[in-house]
Length: 498
Image (cartoon, rainbow, N blue to C red; front, side, top):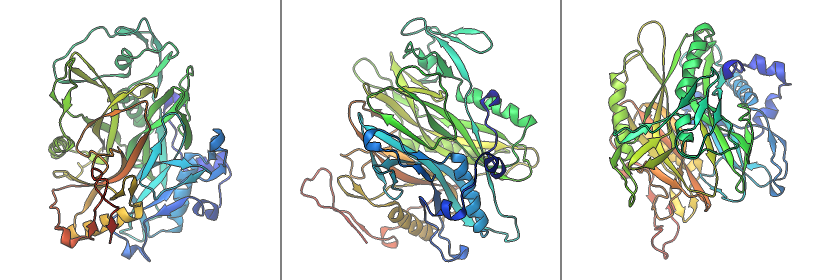
């Protein structure tokens, strides 16, 4: 790919590269949803459909043979086939969703908790979630989606020694020696090269350009080759690059299935994924704004740094949005990124697209809010008010048993109908499971320690965003939830949801 910028994956380009599956083949396998309405007029306030890749080869997970699935471009084609067969619906938001593949190559979309073995063999799959609405104008043409994958460009890494001071040999031949920079701002946002100062591994002879540099190159490319349509969503997606020592950083952005072997080193790379509605070019430029939790107490040799809570981060997002002119926000994405502490200074690798992981050591991760927005020629977009958010967690029934996705969506629908709130955006994301918490997660905490030597569970949640504040309705107006499970009480039993 020229400058590692992916070409749009339209139905025509996909059809030219591989035989298209039949509609029955696509829609008859691994497709679930919550568009449970007899007609678009009965569509719930928040509805979705998941389109997952078809299984091509089951492999044998027990023997560490990874199953094979369709490419993501074929998933986009399947989504367009579904839209063509359901012309009364439109997609107002789409996102990549990831699920663990169980033994027998079974994808369980309804399950809201999954286990990631530390030293076992984990297989994952990614598909497409379409958030649906009723088409406002029935005479409009059927909506069709396109996709552009943007892969960061490689840079050569020439390590000189462990610690500070490796030289980063860029493609233009310039060598940059980071040295001992110090800032007293509480936290520092750093690039890929700076993060590598802390963990140079001899086999890592390549890294990747940072997120902002990659985005700048994309926007330059879009000036001469604009997207054939209007941006629907932009997200960062983590792709596996290789496993074990060595490797040149190559990855397939169209890949849907990958595995992780806990006994080996793993490397992951962030790519930018642009979803758009095919049509006349809107000549849009894509921007990113990261909101990083601020340090509230500097750490030292005896204690770690402390960070502000997630509501404080979202409050800053809410203040920032109304002050922006002429932009259109296309996505709000919760992102976990690595950070380091040194002499009380916190370094957050929010710009890094390269991550080298081993289960032999703990990893410090911090949660940030990534706002994607676009600008375009012509009249400015309507002003957005103060943002508010409501995260819906699956109800915890017992120690490691949570309600299903359908049950969670039922409660979300009831909440939206009672409050009458108009949805601004929506997001599917994961929390690290915390057994001692009543809900199973620490929702307000921004930093986590991902322990390397122990297995982990993750909880799926749905966050819904609104353009103005909301008031939480009284519990009597919502479906009752009788929870009698308490993780701190061994005599407690499971909950019953009515």
